[in-house]
Length: 359
Image 1: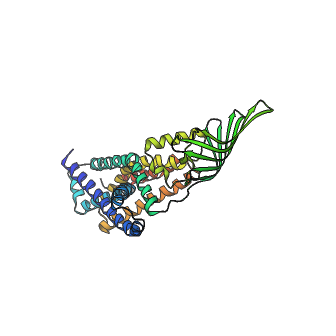
Image 2: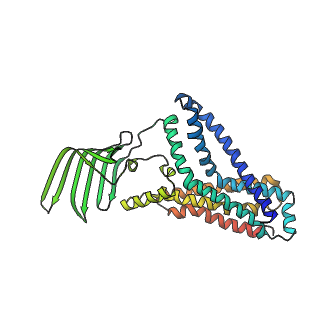
Image 3: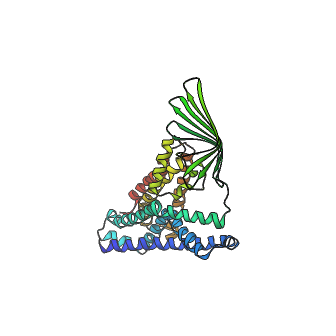
């Protein structure tokens, strides 16, 4: 690395982390002002507020704002260099614009890797603690169960539950059917299915079991209780808020594979989260190239114009991402394409701006 690379890299990373620190400080102050009444009313311990909530709140929001502040940081310090004629001096000394881009890409690689590791492995377990704190001290825990659930728990085994209560961990009007190809072999109905945390199994209450023997014979068994182990968990029946944000990449891949094996088709949100973690980290490269190409030229309006354009493009990127992922959730677009489409479009814009930048 040359002295110039170190100089630009220090400015890049210094501006980025200062901007993130500033916005997070403001966010914490506003969040505390909004939630202080809940903390007092629910007697939240100070240690839990600091270490369970805010210690996990900070990395989550820092990573959330990373693409935005990569762009703003590049725009800010590059524009400042341009108006102090540093960019002109660098290019006049024989350094090509492509060579000038090297420390920017190195800085983007550092931030992108940092963002990916945070989003994939550090933030998910932290989110579990933060969301548990919110459920205990900020929001009243409510029943997040589901109605009329049809689920394939393994090949040829299907489950139906009329209503599942997440607070009681009980499924009402339970039915299980086992098929051999198209032939129904066993059917179990029960008034309720209760999850036993000690055995990690299910207890069927007031059950009736029918085994179909041949085409015209049935063996019927009834009883008050039947303990069984089924390939399903209480979490499968809950619509927890942003449940996917509490799983690291390994857990997310395993969950998606398990749901697909069961025949569950609605895994778009989980796929979007998986692809988003990579796409968000990669966006640091695209936004860095755009920022350098925009801010390296002196224009009327000064630094304020560059920053204004940078903020507008950043919010356009976020809006584009939101719209495309909405289409994916509704099944109108592939989750992979929905997540990567903003990067593809803005990569084309970055290539155009790079071509038009002063060389």
